Image (cartoon, rainbow over all chains, first blue to last red; front, side):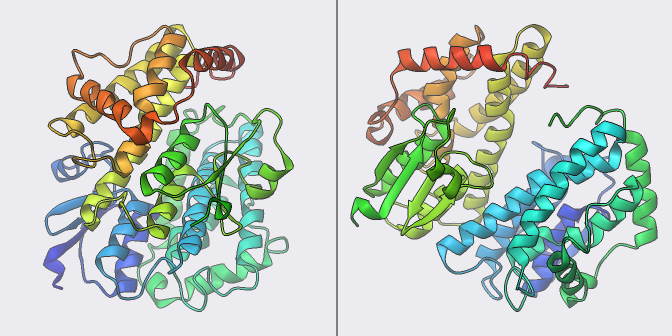
Length: 228
Length: 228
Protein backbone atom coordinates (compact mmCIF):
# COMPACT_ATOMS: atom_id res chain seq x y z
CA UNK A 1 0.00 0.00 0.00
CA UNK A 2 1.52 3.30 -1.07
CA UNK A 3 1.93 6.08 1.48
CA UNK A 4 -0.24 8.33 -0.68
CA UNK A 5 -3.23 6.45 0.76
CA UNK A 6 -2.32 7.00 4.41
CA UNK A 7 -1.73 10.36 6.05
CA UNK A 8 -1.19 11.31 9.67
CA UNK A 9 -1.89 14.87 10.79
CA UNK A 10 -0.33 15.48 14.19
CA UNK A 11 1.81 17.71 16.37
CA UNK A 12 5.42 16.75 17.14
CA UNK A 13 5.04 16.72 20.95
CA UNK A 14 1.65 14.97 21.07
CA UNK A 15 1.74 11.60 22.86
CA UNK A 16 -1.63 10.82 21.23
CA UNK A 17 -0.31 11.37 17.73
CA UNK A 18 2.75 9.25 18.45
CA UNK A 19 0.49 6.27 19.19
CA UNK A 20 -0.86 6.43 15.66
CA UNK A 21 2.61 6.58 14.14
CA UNK A 22 3.83 3.71 16.32
CA UNK A 23 0.87 1.53 15.30
CA UNK A 24 1.43 2.20 11.58
CA UNK A 25 5.17 1.49 11.89
CA UNK A 26 4.40 -1.71 13.81
CA UNK A 27 2.11 -2.81 10.97
CA UNK A 28 4.65 -1.79 8.34
CA UNK A 29 2.23 0.70 6.78
CA UNK A 30 3.92 3.63 5.05
CA UNK A 31 2.35 7.04 5.66
CA UNK A 32 2.78 10.68 4.88
CA UNK A 33 3.18 12.93 7.93
CA UNK A 34 1.75 16.47 8.14
CA UNK A 35 2.79 18.66 11.06
CA UNK A 36 -0.06 20.74 12.48
CA UNK A 37 0.40 24.01 14.35
CA UNK A 38 -2.07 23.37 17.18
CA UNK A 39 -1.86 27.01 18.30
CA UNK A 40 -2.91 28.28 14.89
CA UNK A 41 -5.04 25.51 13.50
CA UNK A 42 -5.08 24.93 9.76
CA UNK A 43 -8.20 24.75 7.63
CA UNK A 44 -7.14 21.18 6.89
CA UNK A 45 -7.47 20.20 10.56
CA UNK A 46 -10.80 21.99 10.95
CA UNK A 47 -12.13 20.14 7.90
CA UNK A 48 -10.81 16.77 9.01
CA UNK A 49 -11.91 17.02 12.64
CA UNK A 50 -14.68 19.64 12.84
CA UNK A 51 -16.08 18.26 16.11
CA UNK A 52 -13.01 18.21 18.37
CA UNK A 53 -10.55 20.20 16.19
CA UNK A 54 -7.73 18.09 17.60
CA UNK A 55 -4.78 16.05 16.43
CA UNK A 56 -4.12 13.27 15.63
CA UNK A 57 -6.13 12.57 12.50
CA UNK A 58 -5.51 9.50 10.37
CA UNK A 59 -6.62 9.97 6.79
CA UNK A 60 -7.04 6.72 4.90
CA UNK A 61 -8.59 6.48 1.44
CA UNK A 62 -9.54 10.16 1.83
CA UNK A 63 -11.55 9.51 5.00
CA UNK A 64 -10.56 11.06 8.36
CA UNK A 65 -10.50 8.99 11.55
CA UNK A 66 -9.95 10.79 14.88
CA UNK A 67 -9.31 10.03 18.56
CA UNK A 68 -6.15 7.98 19.08
CA UNK A 69 -7.73 4.86 20.64
CA UNK A 70 -10.39 4.75 17.91
CA UNK A 71 -7.63 5.13 15.32
CA UNK A 72 -5.73 2.19 16.86
CA UNK A 73 -8.83 -0.02 16.51
CA UNK A 74 -9.23 1.16 12.91
CA UNK A 75 -5.60 0.40 12.09
CA UNK A 76 -5.88 -3.06 13.64
CA UNK A 77 -9.06 -3.85 11.69
CA UNK A 78 -7.77 -2.44 8.40
CA UNK A 79 -4.26 -3.94 8.33
CA UNK A 80 -4.43 -7.34 9.87
CA UNK A 81 -0.72 -8.22 9.90
CA UNK A 82 0.97 -7.94 13.33
CA UNK A 83 -2.21 -7.75 15.41
CA UNK A 84 -2.25 -5.00 18.03
CA UNK A 85 -5.09 -6.34 20.19
CA UNK A 86 -4.99 -9.89 21.55
CA UNK A 87 -7.14 -12.56 19.85
CA UNK A 88 -9.50 -13.52 22.67
CA UNK A 89 -12.42 -11.18 23.48
CA UNK A 90 -11.65 -11.25 27.21
CA UNK A 91 -8.00 -10.31 26.66
CA UNK A 92 -9.12 -7.59 24.26
CA UNK A 93 -11.50 -6.23 26.90
CA UNK A 94 -8.65 -6.15 29.44
CA UNK A 95 -6.35 -4.27 27.06
CA UNK A 96 -9.09 -1.69 26.38
CA UNK A 97 -9.85 -1.44 30.09
CA UNK A 98 -6.25 -0.63 31.07
CA UNK A 99 -5.78 1.79 28.20
CA UNK A 100 -8.87 3.69 29.32
CA UNK A 101 -7.88 3.52 32.99
CA UNK A 102 -4.39 4.92 32.41
CA UNK A 103 -5.72 7.67 30.14
CA UNK A 104 -8.23 8.90 32.71
CA UNK A 105 -6.26 8.32 35.88
CA UNK A 106 -2.54 8.57 35.17
CA UNK A 107 -2.34 10.78 32.09
CA UNK A 108 -4.86 13.38 33.23
CA UNK A 109 -3.50 13.49 36.77
CA UNK A 110 0.14 13.69 35.67
CA UNK A 111 -0.72 16.53 33.30
CA UNK A 112 -2.53 18.50 36.01
CA UNK A 113 0.30 17.78 38.46
CA UNK A 114 2.84 19.11 35.95
CA UNK A 115 0.91 22.35 35.53
CA UNK A 116 0.05 23.04 39.18
CA UNK A 117 1.80 23.31 42.54
CA UNK A 118 1.09 23.07 46.26
CA UNK A 119 -2.06 21.26 47.34
CA UNK A 120 -3.42 20.99 43.77
CA UNK A 121 -0.26 19.23 42.69
CA UNK A 122 -0.28 16.92 45.73
CA UNK A 123 -3.89 15.89 45.02
CA UNK A 124 -3.10 15.12 41.40
CA UNK A 125 0.11 13.27 42.34
CA UNK A 126 -1.83 11.04 44.72
CA UNK A 127 -4.14 9.94 41.89
CA UNK A 128 -1.20 9.48 39.50
CA UNK A 129 0.81 7.36 41.95
CA UNK A 130 -2.17 5.15 42.74
CA UNK A 131 -2.59 4.56 39.01
CA UNK A 132 1.15 3.72 38.70
CA UNK A 133 0.70 1.08 41.41
CA UNK A 134 -2.02 -0.62 39.33
CA UNK A 135 0.17 -0.56 36.23
CA UNK A 136 3.02 -2.10 38.23
CA UNK A 137 0.79 -5.01 39.23
CA UNK A 138 -0.30 -5.55 35.62
CA UNK A 139 3.15 -5.51 33.98
CA UNK A 140 4.91 -7.63 36.64
CA UNK A 141 6.55 -10.70 35.08
CA UNK A 142 6.07 -9.58 31.47
CA UNK A 143 8.46 -8.01 28.98
CA UNK A 144 5.63 -6.15 27.26
CA UNK A 145 1.88 -5.97 27.93
CA UNK A 146 1.60 -7.71 24.55
CA UNK A 147 3.93 -10.54 25.71
CA UNK A 148 7.24 -10.98 23.86
CA UNK A 149 6.46 -8.14 21.45
CA UNK A 150 4.61 -4.86 21.84
CA UNK A 151 0.84 -4.66 21.33
CA UNK A 152 -2.13 -2.34 21.75
CA UNK A 153 -1.53 -1.59 25.43
CA UNK A 154 2.20 -0.96 24.97
CA UNK A 155 1.37 1.56 22.27
CA UNK A 156 -1.43 3.11 24.34
CA UNK A 157 0.83 3.43 27.40
CA UNK A 158 4.13 4.02 25.60
CA UNK A 159 4.08 7.76 26.45
CA UNK A 160 4.86 6.80 30.07
CA UNK A 161 8.38 5.81 29.04
CA UNK A 162 9.31 9.12 27.42
CA UNK A 163 6.73 11.85 28.07
CA UNK A 164 6.20 11.20 31.77
CA UNK A 165 9.87 11.67 32.81
CA UNK A 166 9.83 14.99 30.94
CA UNK A 167 6.64 16.04 32.72
CA UNK A 168 8.22 15.02 36.04
CA UNK A 169 11.19 17.27 35.36
CA UNK A 170 9.00 20.18 34.25
CA UNK A 171 6.70 19.84 37.28
CA UNK A 172 9.61 19.19 39.73
CA UNK A 173 7.80 16.08 40.91
CA UNK A 174 8.23 12.33 41.09
CA UNK A 175 5.64 9.82 39.91
CA UNK A 176 7.84 6.97 38.70
CA UNK A 177 9.54 5.68 41.85
CA UNK A 178 11.96 3.09 40.46
CA UNK A 179 12.20 1.29 43.83
CA UNK A 180 8.43 1.04 44.19
CA UNK A 181 7.77 0.32 40.53
CA UNK A 182 10.66 -1.89 39.34
CA UNK A 183 8.58 -3.84 36.79
CA UNK A 184 7.24 -0.64 35.22
CA UNK A 185 10.77 0.78 35.12
CA UNK A 186 11.99 -2.33 33.29
CA UNK A 187 9.05 -2.16 30.88
CA UNK A 188 9.93 1.49 30.17
CA UNK A 189 13.47 0.42 29.22
CA UNK A 190 12.08 -2.34 26.99
CA UNK A 191 9.70 0.09 25.30
CA UNK A 192 12.42 2.65 24.67
CA UNK A 193 14.70 0.07 23.07
CA UNK A 194 11.99 -1.23 20.74
CA UNK A 195 12.77 -0.19 17.14
CA UNK A 196 9.18 0.92 16.46
CA UNK A 197 9.25 3.27 19.44
CA UNK A 198 12.76 4.69 19.41
CA UNK A 199 12.68 5.40 15.71
CA UNK A 200 10.76 8.65 16.00
CA UNK A 201 10.91 10.18 19.47
CA UNK A 202 10.98 13.97 19.59
CA UNK A 203 14.19 15.54 21.00
CA UNK A 204 14.10 15.63 24.80
CA UNK A 205 15.48 19.18 25.09
CA UNK A 206 12.77 20.54 22.81
CA UNK A 207 10.14 18.63 24.79
CA UNK A 208 11.41 20.28 28.00
CA UNK A 209 11.14 23.75 26.52
CA UNK A 210 7.69 23.06 25.07
CA UNK A 211 6.17 21.55 28.22
CA UNK A 212 7.69 24.29 30.41
CA UNK A 213 5.77 26.75 28.27
CA UNK A 214 2.55 24.68 28.62
CA UNK A 215 2.97 24.60 32.40
CA UNK A 216 3.31 28.36 32.47
CA UNK A 217 0.28 28.89 30.22
CA UNK A 218 -2.03 26.46 32.01
CA UNK A 219 -1.11 26.80 35.68
CA UNK A 220 -3.95 29.19 36.50
CA UNK A 221 -6.58 27.33 34.41
CA UNK A 222 -5.90 24.01 36.10
CA UNK A 223 -5.88 25.38 39.65
CA UNK A 224 -8.38 23.54 41.82
CA UNK A 225 -8.95 20.95 39.09
CA UNK A 226 -8.51 17.91 41.28
CA UNK A 227 -11.00 17.67 44.07
CA UNK A 228 -9.97 14.47 45.87
CA UNK B 1 -26.06 -20.91 25.97
CA UNK B 2 -27.60 -21.21 29.44
CA UNK B 3 -28.08 -18.08 31.52
CA UNK B 4 -25.88 -19.62 34.24
CA UNK B 5 -22.88 -18.62 32.09
CA UNK B 6 -23.83 -14.95 31.79
CA UNK B 7 -24.51 -12.59 34.66
CA UNK B 8 -25.11 -8.85 34.75
CA UNK B 9 -24.49 -6.94 37.97
CA UNK B 10 -26.10 -3.52 37.75
CA UNK B 11 -28.31 -0.92 39.40
CA UNK B 12 -31.90 -0.45 38.25
CA UNK B 13 -31.59 3.26 37.33
CA UNK B 14 -28.17 3.03 35.64
CA UNK B 15 -28.21 4.00 31.96
CA UNK B 16 -24.83 2.29 31.62
CA UNK B 17 -26.10 -1.02 32.95
CA UNK B 18 -29.13 -0.86 30.68
CA UNK B 19 -26.83 -0.77 27.64
CA UNK B 20 -25.42 -4.14 28.61
CA UNK B 21 -28.88 -5.66 29.06
CA UNK B 22 -30.09 -4.21 25.74
CA UNK B 23 -27.08 -5.66 23.91
CA UNK B 24 -27.59 -9.13 25.41
CA UNK B 25 -31.33 -9.08 24.59
CA UNK B 26 -30.54 -7.92 21.04
CA UNK B 27 -28.20 -10.90 20.66
CA UNK B 28 -30.71 -13.26 22.24
CA UNK B 29 -28.29 -14.17 25.04
CA UNK B 30 -30.01 -15.21 28.29
CA UNK B 31 -28.51 -13.78 31.47
CA UNK B 32 -29.00 -13.72 35.19
CA UNK B 33 -29.48 -10.24 36.68
CA UNK B 34 -28.13 -9.20 40.08
CA UNK B 35 -29.24 -5.88 41.53
CA UNK B 36 -26.44 -3.97 43.27
CA UNK B 37 -26.98 -1.41 46.02
CA UNK B 38 -24.55 1.24 44.78
CA UNK B 39 -24.83 3.17 48.05
CA UNK B 40 -23.75 0.16 50.08
CA UNK B 41 -21.55 -1.79 47.73
CA UNK B 42 -21.47 -5.57 48.03
CA UNK B 43 -18.31 -7.63 48.39
CA UNK B 44 -19.29 -9.20 45.08
CA UNK B 45 -18.99 -5.84 43.28
CA UNK B 46 -15.69 -5.00 44.98
CA UNK B 47 -14.30 -8.37 43.91
CA UNK B 48 -15.58 -8.08 40.34
CA UNK B 49 -14.53 -4.47 39.77
CA UNK B 50 -11.81 -3.63 42.31
CA UNK B 51 -10.43 -0.74 40.23
CA UNK B 52 -13.53 1.39 39.62
CA UNK B 53 -15.99 -0.32 42.03
CA UNK B 54 -18.80 0.53 39.61
CA UNK B 55 -21.70 -1.13 37.85
CA UNK B 56 -22.30 -2.56 35.33
CA UNK B 57 -20.24 -5.73 35.39
CA UNK B 58 -20.77 -8.51 32.89
CA UNK B 59 -19.61 -11.89 34.19
CA UNK B 60 -19.10 -14.46 31.47
CA UNK B 61 -17.50 -17.86 32.06
CA UNK B 62 -16.64 -16.61 35.57
CA UNK B 63 -14.66 -13.63 34.23
CA UNK B 64 -15.73 -10.04 34.93
CA UNK B 65 -15.79 -7.40 32.19
CA UNK B 66 -16.42 -3.76 33.16
CA UNK B 67 -17.09 -0.35 31.56
CA UNK B 68 -20.22 -0.37 29.40
CA UNK B 69 -18.61 0.45 26.03
CA UNK B 70 -15.92 -2.19 26.59
CA UNK B 71 -18.64 -4.67 27.52
CA UNK B 72 -20.51 -3.87 24.27
CA UNK B 73 -17.37 -4.67 22.26
CA UNK B 74 -16.94 -7.90 24.23
CA UNK B 75 -20.55 -8.93 23.63
CA UNK B 76 -20.23 -8.21 19.91
CA UNK B 77 -17.02 -10.25 19.64
CA UNK B 78 -18.27 -13.15 21.74
CA UNK B 79 -21.77 -13.61 20.27
CA UNK B 80 -21.55 -12.89 16.59
CA UNK B 81 -25.27 -13.13 15.68
CA UNK B 82 -27.01 -9.77 15.13
CA UNK B 83 -23.85 -7.63 14.90
CA UNK B 84 -23.88 -4.44 16.96
CA UNK B 85 -21.05 -2.62 15.20
CA UNK B 86 -21.11 -2.12 11.42
CA UNK B 87 -18.88 -4.35 9.26
CA UNK B 88 -16.55 -1.78 7.71
CA UNK B 89 -13.67 -0.40 9.84
CA UNK B 90 -14.49 3.19 8.90
CA UNK B 91 -18.16 2.81 9.88
CA UNK B 92 -17.04 1.12 13.10
CA UNK B 93 -14.73 4.04 13.85
CA UNK B 94 -17.62 6.49 13.30
CA UNK B 95 -19.91 4.56 15.66
CA UNK B 96 -17.21 4.55 18.36
CA UNK B 97 -16.50 8.22 17.76
CA UNK B 98 -20.12 9.32 18.27
CA UNK B 99 -20.61 7.06 21.28
CA UNK B 100 -17.56 8.64 22.92
CA UNK B 101 -18.59 12.15 21.89
CA UNK B 102 -22.10 11.87 23.34
CA UNK B 103 -20.79 10.30 26.56
CA UNK B 104 -18.34 13.12 27.19
CA UNK B 105 -20.33 16.05 25.86
CA UNK B 106 -24.05 15.36 26.23
CA UNK B 107 -24.25 12.87 29.08
CA UNK B 108 -21.79 14.60 31.38
CA UNK B 109 -23.19 18.05 30.65
CA UNK B 110 -26.82 16.96 31.05
CA UNK B 111 -25.96 15.32 34.38
CA UNK B 112 -24.22 18.44 35.68
CA UNK B 113 -27.08 20.62 34.39
CA UNK B 114 -29.62 18.44 36.23
CA UNK B 115 -27.72 18.80 39.50
CA UNK B 116 -26.92 22.52 39.36
CA UNK B 117 -28.69 25.83 38.84
CA UNK B 118 -28.05 29.41 37.74
CA UNK B 119 -24.88 30.08 35.79
CA UNK B 120 -23.47 26.57 36.35
CA UNK B 121 -26.58 25.07 34.83
CA UNK B 122 -26.55 27.50 31.90
CA UNK B 123 -22.93 26.63 31.10
CA UNK B 124 -23.67 22.92 31.16
CA UNK B 125 -26.87 23.35 29.11
CA UNK B 126 -24.93 25.19 26.42
CA UNK B 127 -22.56 22.23 26.04
CA UNK B 128 -25.46 19.75 26.09
CA UNK B 129 -27.48 21.61 23.44
CA UNK B 130 -24.46 21.92 21.14
CA UNK B 131 -23.99 18.16 21.43
CA UNK B 132 -27.71 17.61 20.63
CA UNK B 133 -27.23 19.65 17.46
CA UNK B 134 -24.47 17.27 16.32
CA UNK B 135 -26.63 14.24 17.06
CA UNK B 136 -29.48 15.79 15.06
CA UNK B 137 -27.20 16.13 12.03
CA UNK B 138 -26.06 12.50 12.35
CA UNK B 139 -29.49 10.85 12.72
CA UNK B 140 -31.24 12.93 10.02
CA UNK B 141 -32.83 10.68 7.39
CA UNK B 142 -32.31 7.44 9.30
CA UNK B 143 -34.70 5.33 11.37
CA UNK B 144 -31.87 4.15 13.60
CA UNK B 145 -28.14 4.89 13.67
CA UNK B 146 -27.78 1.21 12.78
CA UNK B 147 -30.08 1.63 9.73
CA UNK B 148 -33.36 -0.31 9.67
CA UNK B 149 -32.60 -1.99 12.99
CA UNK B 150 -30.80 -0.84 16.13
CA UNK B 151 -27.03 -1.22 16.48
CA UNK B 152 -24.09 -0.22 18.70
CA UNK B 153 -24.76 3.51 18.57
CA UNK B 154 -28.50 3.17 19.23
CA UNK B 155 -27.68 1.12 22.31
CA UNK B 156 -24.94 3.53 23.39
CA UNK B 157 -27.22 6.56 22.96
CA UNK B 158 -30.51 4.88 23.91
CA UNK B 159 -30.53 6.58 27.35
CA UNK B 160 -31.34 9.85 25.56
CA UNK B 161 -34.84 8.58 24.80
CA UNK B 162 -35.80 7.75 28.38
CA UNK B 163 -33.28 9.06 30.93
CA UNK B 164 -32.78 12.51 29.44
CA UNK B 165 -36.48 13.56 29.61
CA UNK B 166 -36.47 12.51 33.28
CA UNK B 167 -33.32 14.53 33.92
CA UNK B 168 -34.91 17.51 32.14
CA UNK B 169 -37.91 17.32 34.45
CA UNK B 170 -35.76 16.93 37.57
CA UNK B 171 -33.50 19.83 36.58
CA UNK B 172 -36.42 22.03 35.35
CA UNK B 173 -34.59 22.49 32.07
CA UNK B 174 -34.95 21.80 28.37
CA UNK B 175 -32.31 20.12 26.23
CA UNK B 176 -34.44 18.23 23.70
CA UNK B 177 -36.15 20.97 21.72
CA UNK B 178 -38.51 18.98 19.47
CA UNK B 179 -38.76 21.83 16.96
CA UNK B 180 -35.00 22.21 16.68
CA UNK B 181 -34.28 18.49 16.82
CA UNK B 182 -37.12 16.77 14.90
CA UNK B 183 -34.98 13.88 13.62
CA UNK B 184 -33.68 13.12 17.11
CA UNK B 185 -37.23 13.29 18.47
CA UNK B 186 -38.37 10.78 15.86
CA UNK B 187 -35.40 8.52 16.61
CA UNK B 188 -36.34 8.65 20.32
CA UNK B 189 -39.84 7.42 19.45
CA UNK B 190 -38.39 4.64 17.29
CA UNK B 191 -36.00 3.60 20.07
CA UNK B 192 -38.77 3.52 22.68
CA UNK B 193 -40.98 1.34 20.50
CA UNK B 194 -38.22 -1.19 19.81
CA UNK B 195 -38.98 -4.47 21.64
CA UNK B 196 -35.39 -4.82 22.94
CA UNK B 197 -35.52 -1.37 24.53
CA UNK B 198 -39.07 -1.13 25.87
CA UNK B 199 -38.96 -4.58 27.41
CA UNK B 200 -37.10 -3.50 30.51
CA UNK B 201 -37.32 0.22 31.22
CA UNK B 202 -37.45 1.21 34.89
CA UNK B 203 -40.71 2.88 36.05
CA UNK B 204 -40.68 6.61 35.27
CA UNK B 205 -42.13 7.67 38.63
CA UNK B 206 -39.39 5.81 40.52
CA UNK B 207 -36.76 7.37 38.24
CA UNK B 208 -38.10 10.84 39.07
CA UNK B 209 -37.86 10.18 42.81
CA UNK B 210 -34.40 8.69 42.51
CA UNK B 211 -32.88 11.43 40.33
CA UNK B 212 -34.48 14.16 42.47
CA UNK B 213 -32.56 12.67 45.39
CA UNK B 214 -29.33 12.60 43.36
CA UNK B 215 -29.78 16.25 42.39
CA UNK B 216 -30.19 17.17 46.05
CA UNK B 217 -27.15 15.14 47.10
CA UNK B 218 -24.81 16.35 44.35
CA UNK B 219 -25.76 20.00 43.85
CA UNK B 220 -22.98 21.38 46.02
CA UNK B 221 -20.31 18.95 44.72
CA UNK B 222 -20.96 19.83 41.09
CA UNK B 223 -21.03 23.60 41.62
CA UNK B 224 -18.50 25.30 39.35
CA UNK B 225 -17.88 22.06 37.47
CA UNK B 226 -18.31 23.52 34.00
CA UNK B 227 -15.85 26.22 33.17
CA UNK B 228 -16.85 27.23 29.65
